[in-house]
Every structure is written in structure tokens, then in C-alpha cells.
Image 1 (cartoon, helix red, strand yellow):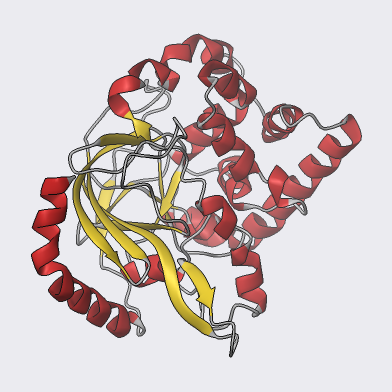
Image 2 (cartoon, rainbow, N blue to C red; image 1 turned 30 degrees about the vertical axis):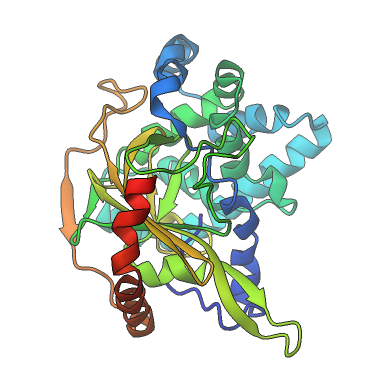
Length: 343
């Protein structure tokens, strides 16, 4: 639910940005990119039996939300309040947009639209927002318990999401950013945060939001404020450029905040192909996404067979970012090969 193309980081106090800043801290969790080699057994596919009953009777959005909120150890009153709030927001958003949705996606029902929209909604206490609870369970060290906690929601969300066509970006690159600098040294004691080194194979275990516009990714980096004049002095964090088998779902019309984003399915595997040395607090990592099977893939949960390319969205503010990238690569041209060889 991040990387909106209209995000204006020059004015963090604007009404729109206050809503979007809610997600900044969550981005730094990075959905635990564990090494693929050591975690093959943790795939959702290992627990397909959990979803068997849902094929006969598909859970409702209300039932799915209640199951997720229960995993957060909330009392019944709080669960009912959160469920009612999310469904109310979904209905208000989709009822306003449904004519446009139906015109673009004939096979999407209102219930499908509510389900997709629910992922983008914020609860008053953002810790209990659907996207947050869903992804926290998907990256849980106790994989079986995590999948069980959100099984109803995961099932209906994938089922509705896969009615949308795959979106293949024209330039075959997607961008994602984190407010933190990822571990490059291999010395991190956290076993879940394996270092990013050249050739490493990793997995985005949760749903991953991306953008076709690098400017958007850079806008979501962490602001470092000058203590003297209290102005943003620089940005720090990590930017991923994802190539290879890059596709996602365009969920703009379903988005509660009307943000443009491409959502990637869980368990997308990738290989680190290039790491640019940190410059001015920013780490740039290029990755190649592997072509792999989809989780819980069967006839009822296959993505739409319709795939399409669209023109890249134009952004008037792209000039500064493009100039920065050119300058960055020129300054690090001699360092890149040495750094990669050392890694």
C-alpha cells in the first residue's frame, strides 16, 4: 500500500502525505528477505490442506477479517469494531468507483472489489490494518501458524486478485524502496536478515508493493533533517530495481487512497545481480526476479490469462532523479566492480 506516484515528499505535512507516512515505518520491515536455499520448505504450498475446505465454501470478507484480527489477540468488541470499519471503508471506496472498475474488468464482482480494496485500508490503529497483519503472518518464523492465522483472507484475496490481468511494465523494471539501509556486510546477528551480497538468492515472502517510476521509490527514502534549519538535508535507505520476470497487479482503482501501485504476489524469488556502493546514504541494489510457480496454484486460483503492457506513466519530477542516477553511476563506475568482487 505504498509507492504512490503522486507522493509529494517536499511537503510531509500535507493531508495526503500524513496518510502515506503511516506506511513508512512498515516498509523498513522488508518482509524478511530470507535466503531461498534454506527456506524452501517454508512455502505456503506446504500447507495446502489448510485451504481445502474453502474450495467448497468460500469465506466471506467479514469472516476472513475476523480470523485475522483474532490472531492479534484482540477482544471480540475490538474485532467487531475493526471489521465494521474496514468493510465500511471498502464499500464507500468501491461504490464510488465500481462503474469504472466494471468497465475495465468485466469479471470483477463487487465482492471481489471489496476484498482487494480491504488490503489497502488503514485501521485507526495502523498496527491492525489488514495488509500489516497479513504480511506479518506471511513472514513469521512459525510459517504454519502464520499461514493458519490468515488462511481465509489469503485465500479470498488471491482468488479476487487473480481475476485481474497481469501487468507487465513496458520497460521491464519495477522499483521498491526501504527507509532502512539493508545489511551488506554479513555481520548482522539477526538470523532473519541475511546480508545482501552479489549472487545471493532471496525471497519476498509477503505481498510486495512496487512502482514503475524510480522517482517514487526515491521519494519514500528516509528524510535526514538538518538540525540547524530543520530542513531535509538528504535521504537515506535502499532502492531495489527489479528486472526479470516482473509483473504485478494494478490495483489503483481499488485503492482506498487512490494510489498507483503494482502489487506482487508472495514468495517472489530473486537474485542479487548488482550492488552499488552507498552514496550519500542511499544503497542501490539490482535484482533479477525468477520465473516460478504461484502459491496455492490450481484451476480456481490461476491468474487471469489476459496480460498486457501499458505505457509508462509520465512524471514531471523525473528529471532530477534521472540526473541523480546518471551522476551516481558516473561517480561509482570504478568502485562497482571492485565492490562486487569483494562481496
